[in-house]
Image (cartoon, rainbow, N blue to C red; front, side, top):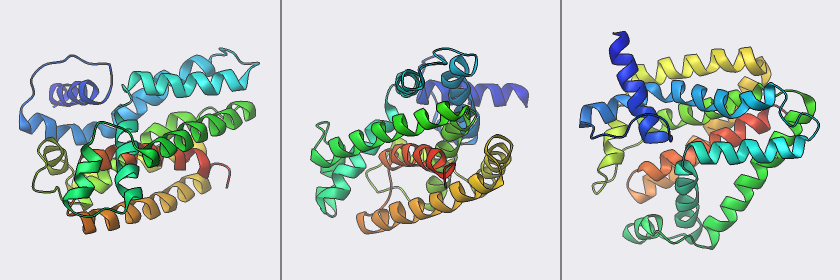
Length: 245
């Protein structure tokens, strides 16, 4: 059991970060990574926050904030930011059906995607600065967890479009039991690191975000990996913002 957990964990790290070992994975292994999204979020949160928790640039919260965002982007290869920009490009265009998916899959970033990137990166930097200034860096460990568990949830609630391949495999792994376990782990971690009210606000705002994305998905015929990435970034921003409500 422990060996299987470790295998799934390393597979998830390989897909979602620069960590792990690249190799060919079976469809079952790809689907099983959804059970490790919480663990990956915890790993990313600890790795990018620990240097500052130990005092790096402690007198310069702006530098800490900028480096925190930079490290989180670097360690994940900007994977989720790509989905964030793609979905906002498609959503902002008001296109439907096949045209929507053409825009989402276009490797070029459009105006709406660029605006979303500025808002997202600037938002994370501002919020991280406030958290570092207050000395509440533990929230920055929880944020990557919240984003990835939200992605598991939308994966279980949505359906993949007919043309989706890899995204469909991830969605198959988002079973009800996986969502339940990941959500409980995230809730417990959120309460321990942030408190009850911030965790509650994070949950409520994430529900609103998921509802919005699922409305778009219903019109467009399903969700793909870009929706998962957009949910990760949205969930991170929400967890950081909710602490100040």
